[in-house]
Amino acid sequence: MANYFVTYDLNGGVPTHKAMDEHMGKAGWDRGRVLETVWYVGTSQTTSEVFDHVNSILSKNDQILVIEATDASFRNLLISEKSLQEAWAANE
Image 1 (cartoon, rainbow, N blue to C red):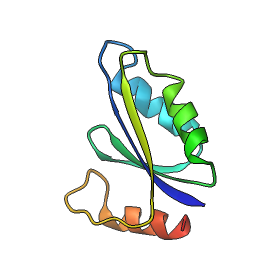
Image 2: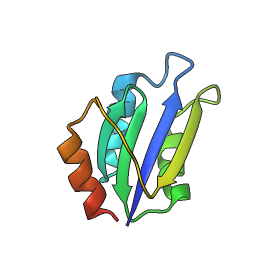
Image 3: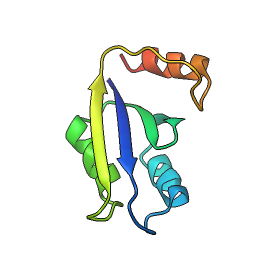
Image 4: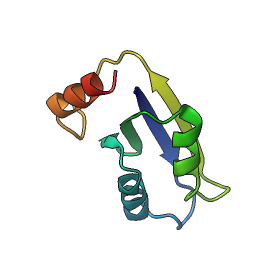
């Protein structure tokens, strides 16, 4: 299991933020939007597999970054800190 942060910039009309939300939900990962276009992902998949799933909906003009994380500090996230801490611990 691993903890990832996925961030992207959408530079066109497609996909929309709503479409990205739906796409992230289809992966079956522990996940939560932590900032506007930054997601926490907990999964047994590799960095490349996470990248490939997210990248599959993006246009050539969009940007993406997937980071496997071993530690994090945070405050004022869009999801509850407790839910992130619980998901993080479950995927360590």
